[in-house]
Length: 115
Image (cartoon, rainbow, N blue to C red; front, side):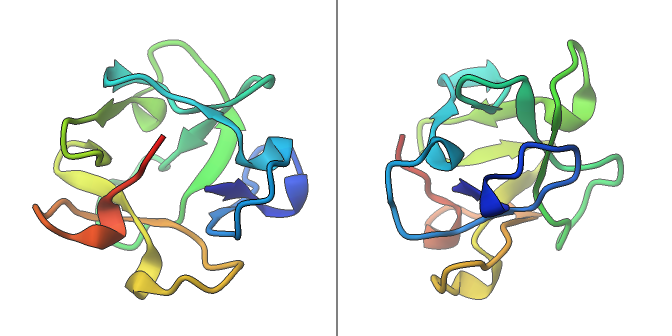
């Protein structure tokens, strides 16, 4: 996961990008109910107010008790909430492909994240 252009501002898309070790790819996450925060910042992975398939992932200033920023990192290495997971859009691994939410499915490799 990568913050597009390393722009730390509300609404910046979160995309897939080749690993390069930059701060834009460093995230803080724990198993269980959690926030997914960009390391060293006050920006969190945010899915927006309307749940469902195809919602583009972005960062937003972290807020306590903000439902849009609440996630569950489960034993299957999926990051999701309320039946939707962070998903690699169409399974495309090309740099710049914005991540999205999609209905969680066991065995869907587009939804498996290693941290």
